[in-house]
Length: 462
Length: 138
Image (cartoon, rainbow over all chains, first blue to last red; front, side, top):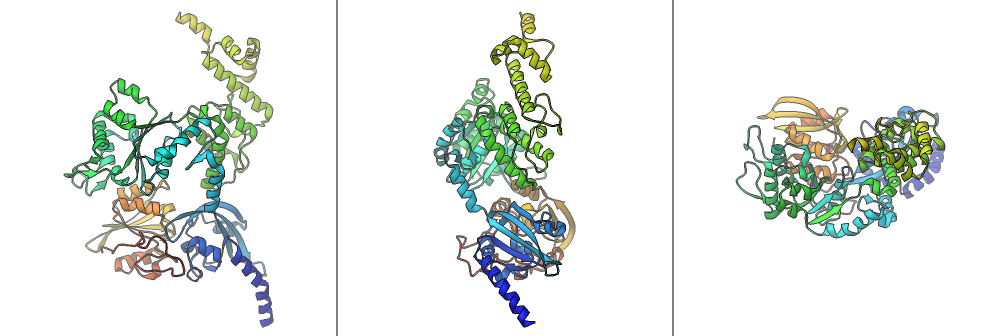
């Protein structure tokens, strides 16, 4: 028996040496989820020493975002199938969120009986840093772009972040104004404070006032205790006021006072509080036009419009679409625990040809929708919504390069017709094709046209 | 006074940032006057903090919690007792009996509760860990 035991030890000794030397964290558990082994890298990544970890429940030691209902090891023991490279994060002993990838396997004894499971995990913090370094000049903070228009923005962003000035971000809906504001905050000296966002258009005036400035107990019926406002929550950090054009004239006055005097009074307060925040405002409206029409105070406009950043719509930075799609796929794979393998070239070309009136948000929603339909394979044309594929090829039909061409043709024709008020001849000229070719393609591609074309409408108007 | 215990599978949820369920105990003059379970939004973090505020929670007892989440909840003046582990009923009993600060209810490796638990590790920049629990009011 002792011989056998010593033989087992001989076999295991090199394995243990290997496990100790690798940079991936590895631990094993028994059937009761108690940790039976915990290597050196696991100690380093989790911040839990081995002697404290062994014998404890794995969730109490590992503390990953998957612990609980989404436990990877539990899934593996249930299905017998290993999980490889799933993204998650753990919370270490100091409260840091550490990005990791998790792999799992079933542990069996010599008779093949399941005796527990093994989990390996890799600290992705350094990979994340390297990935950002590789992205180089195409990245500032969390923003990534290869568009020259965005490059110009990237060049000024660090200087804007370093200054204490109020910033106004302009851009169509869905262009990523909040993301830019977050990046300014993360690059600024205030990044140890909180980034607090408020959508001024989403709340009625009275509620917005109490949300921004807070209230004291007894300020009104139901105010049982003090509630700090967003200005207080953002103390030492950044307050992002989205849709600033939507605030009422009365609130504009209060906001102006805060920006000028850096003080405010919570509702029901008898003393002023200091507003130690940097304000970043954003809107998709033309503020100068609103000011001319008397809907936005002139003094507030000039107080807000100190540094102005304009975000281009997605249709003017289409070179970023592949990059953004890749980012969304990575994120949705992580959030939905799927393994979608990128996007087919034909589907990507459809995305590149579309004008994206809803900008990045619409692109994100399109990728999310495709995730529901596409299972684990790459995103393909049938997974895209009808408005992109012009004549709405239903999901599940066979698609090939020819159909992708048809879809692209249909998108181009539809866009040209819309630009020319459905005047076929003008659209054909713009597309540099003969009008009979245009008619043939309209018929072939099943493009629906309004009964009244641009030429007729012109006559009617005359 | 309302105390919320982040819950999963009749235990304290290992990670509060992803916890979806809390068990709330309301006490007055040392007696339990109400018990209830409430759900939390999955994300973002601010919504989670606002939900606790909406429910009138004074103290949160939870498992591991990230700095960001901790900072947001603290900003609403909610006391946090973090990195707690154990069976839910046992933890509630310990909370009521004033023995929750015992090492048996503390997650492995956590350095809070006013003493250095992880001696083998180099001291980090948090000489006074922000997660240290305040004294219980009960």
